[in-house]
Amino acid sequence: AIRAFERVAPSLADYDWVLFSGSFAPMAAVNRQDQKNLLYCHTIPRFAYDLRAYYREKLGTFRRPVFDWLVNRVRIRYERAISRMSRIAVNSLNTQQRLKRFLHADADIIYPPCNTAEFAWQGVSDYFLSTARLEPYKRVDVVIDAFLRMPDKKLVVASGGSNEASLRRQAGGAENIVFTGWLSRAGMAELLAKCIASIYIPKDEDFGLSPVESMAAGKPVIGVAEGGLRETVVDGETGCLLPPDPTVEAVIEAVTTMTPEKAVAMREACEARALLFGSERFRDEIRALVGAG
Figure (tube, rainbow, N blue to C red):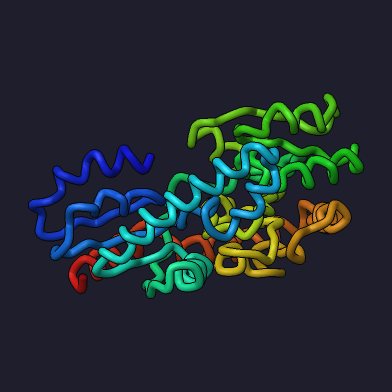
């Protein structure tokens, strides 16, 4: 990804200003020394910064030196690119703090847009919906363990990812746990529309659009008091936030207490909360960023 952005850098040299968006997009600013460079930062390369120890621990002894070399290379290039930005906006307070901590850079907060019109409440069926990608740091394994201990509760795991095969083995063919694989936007919207509540407990998420989409469908979120979820989900009003590094027992308690009746009672608050992260607000704030950049 880094090389791909560096290859397009020459084509950007003659523009008065460029808006970069994405983890490695700033690398395309390599030839832009004295022009306006605006960055909308969704996340820094976390494997090279706050999640470095997490990823390194999962590697064998012989692969760690290669990983350390890669991290060092990424840091040098990324930090050089960040230094060329005229102004930076980020998608959450969490990302803002991470950028300040690791790169000593200041940034404005512009929450990403949710097309709330794509989502709508269509009643309450009999299942809870896991919306996270199937990657280790998303903690879907904790959710599956919880439902293995609640055979009377149904879980639909609506995504894919590198951890899918492992999670399917973990579920062991349990009748109350269903995997859909990757879905279209319409397919996900339909599942959100009819679930009791969504479950999303990732490790220190940058922002997390999934909880906003859930609330746009009028469905509360069983989340975690880490990262961007602290900025989107209102504990007790639009869902519940579990303590950091949530246990299986905490998930079980949250699911047990989130009855269909309680979920329906949160519908109005969820829909109102989601509107705060709508597309029109985002467009206005990005235009203001470009104008002031």
